[in-house]
Image 1 (cartoon, rainbow, N blue to C red):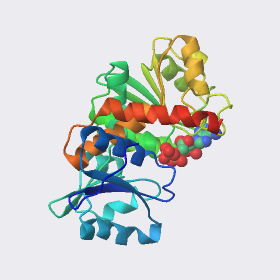
Image 2: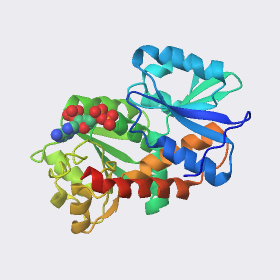
Image 3: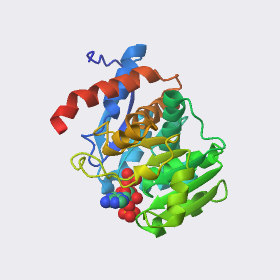
Length: 296
Ligand code: ATR
């Protein structure tokens, strides 16, 4: 990495999280600044829940240009902001705060990051598509909201706990034909949806290191081989689901793209510059490849 040369004009951005040391955002954003010769620096800030309000005040007081916000602050940060954009409101969480002319504006780039990864890496668009989301946590909701706003035709939200799938489906129901289903292979509606889905997006933590040897929660043999199977898990990059889907003949999309592109969109919102997307994705991929053998 190039040494960072700080000057009196250096602009500061960063990420708030607890924990924050695992965050790959500093790596991606600083690489992007360096590649464009920008006098910017991106800093990880370890912010405890009880210090969040003061930390957001710090953004104002210190003139920080913008911050990403990660676990556990994505919902709590909202009450401290001046404005929240439509998609972040629909999701009910913010992952990017932009400091513009003294005002703090909240956005959520997670779902849009997934969509940009989908479009750039597979050439597919969700417009008019029948999509299944497996899981009903924060990532699932962000993706569901983006798909709904991008004009998906049908959305099945499938989850082990049906009530959580119902809550996600209800949240986007005004924008897309959404239905909640149980993650249960004996459920005929779930099996039918598996055959009909053109895009399947796995968002649960199953298959994530260090539990990467467990079988996928989706019965891959019931998927249409013409479907695109996406896993947002990026450690390991080749999850058991991705490997099984590939064997079935499906096109696949691995999870690091969503991480890279949510960062690219946040970069654009915070700096106002077009993101060096390919460089951000490549930086992330190289880092994951270098550290994968350690995490296995
Ligand atoms: P995130 O915010 O990253 O999406 P989360 O909110 O913790 O994470 O959500 C985790 C998701 O993984 C949930 O959909 C969860 O299912 P439940 O709502 O039933 O808990 C799902 N999940 C976790 N472990 C699972 C398992 N062993 N089998 C099926 N689903 C699982």
